[in-house]
Amino acid sequence: MEITKETTMGEMLQYDGGIAYILMQSGMHCVGCPSSIHESLEEACMVHGLDADQVLASIQEYLKTRA
Image (cartoon, rainbow, N blue to C red; front, side, top):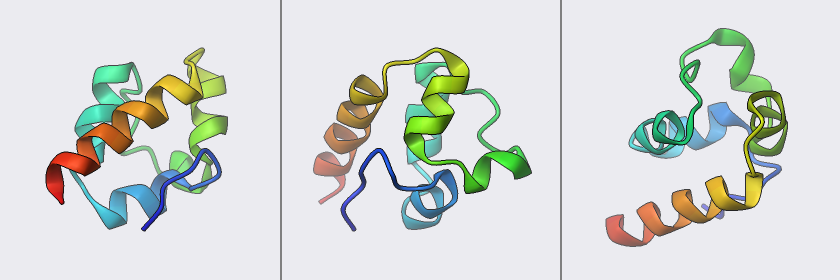
């Protein structure tokens, strides 16, 4: 699965639950919130004042180690 800024939080977490750790380390502590499941990564980052490109890079780096 290719994860982009348009990928929803729910899709990412369903693909690999370990992404939750990356998101929480980035400052998104509401990963389990039901309303966040339908938000894109970009939307969630905007709500939390985070740089979506940096969070996406962290997720992609994590996924490279899982391959």
